[in-house]
Length: 385
Image 1 (cartoon, one colour):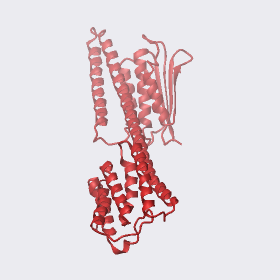
Image 2: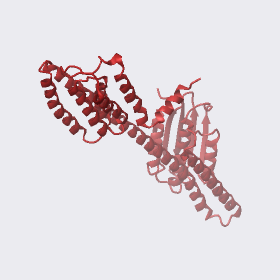
Image 3: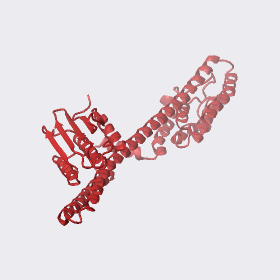
Image 4: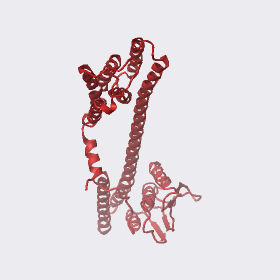
């Protein structure tokens, strides 16, 4: 059984000249078939004369250049025009004259060098050509016929130009879509790097600073250094995951946060010296798209800011899984040893707001009434309605 798709794919893979050649050959052969003797193109009232050797040369001049009409339109156009002019002035009136309209359409669509000048030149050449034909025909053809033929040729040229403009607009649209996609992907990777690196490095810095004051307690010092090592290993694992995302062979599956990862995150923050209360209600949905990952990033960023700007302050994390959404709230008191602004510098929170908004949710972050800082997020688990 013939695979038509494979045949079409191979055909499109051929050189453009090879693909255009059959059209020129088909028109060349059809011109000499007896059936088409009276179906040629005629401008003016010159009587038709029998074909001779010159007629054969003229037909070849009109038809074969169609094979390069897209590759070299600047060469094919004058050849076809010259062949058509001789065809009409000699009175052959062959079917090959139809090639002029095809050539004008292709030239308008593919000619890149001074297309407007070429259009004006064609008009300038047509006027004396029409006058000569009119006189050779002894005025037997109404002037309106020459005007009509001119309008037809201009229409073919204009149609080709329109096709060219349409292709250019489509190419520009695709370029912009590709650029927007690349920009969005770079932003996504930047957010991932910010979330992963900032959290792990912050935890390691806090733990290392605490270790400086534990030289008198070897057991606690050993625990703290072990926590630093564990945090570093997690950072390496997450960075490897991001590198896999950058691999062209990596799949397009949406990454998710595995069950229990939030508790691991909370426990890691506790080991860094931050008192964290964690509550989780409901059962995570089996398929929540990227909502669970966004919820994880919200908690991660809020805990990172708490470590950096409100170290030692009581922090409460509440996660609730509903049928169609996940709600997250992280509140931090301002009673820590370095309490300042648990909201951070703003870049991480801005990235979180973008993540949540893309999924159609709500995000807020600001100071609470008692002087602490609260981060809230409502993240739909389904598609946007």
